[in-house]
Length: 94
Ligand code: SF4
Ligand code: SF4
Image 1 (tube, rainbow, N blue to C red):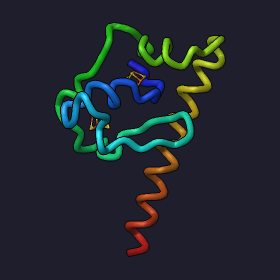
Image 2 (image 1 turned 90 degrees about the horizontal axis):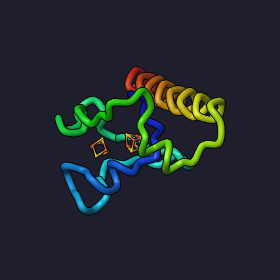
Image 3 (image 1 turned 180 degrees about the vertical axis):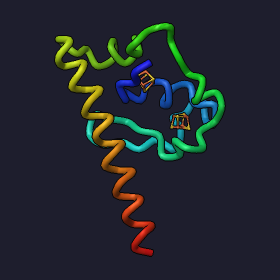
């Protein structure tokens, strides 16, 4: 399932802090990411809907077209990739 990074599940249903937002949220503009993605809890790993794209994110973000939906997925992926590369560069510099 493609996550659209709306943050709704992490803000409302975090297994760490519900009903409060998860303290590990990272917000970048309208995108929300997990700050401990590689070691996130099992419940977060298994958070799925029987759909190709998260229906909650689709509804929350009210994306008007399929192109806008695809762009959202691509932009989120690019932000994650850039962030991982940045962290890898930082750890190499240490
Ligand atoms: S640990 Fe990560 S995936 Fe789980 S609720 Fe917190 S921010 Fe979301
Ligand atoms: S798109 Fe769905 S899975 Fe992704 S953060 Fe929003 S509610 Fe959670």
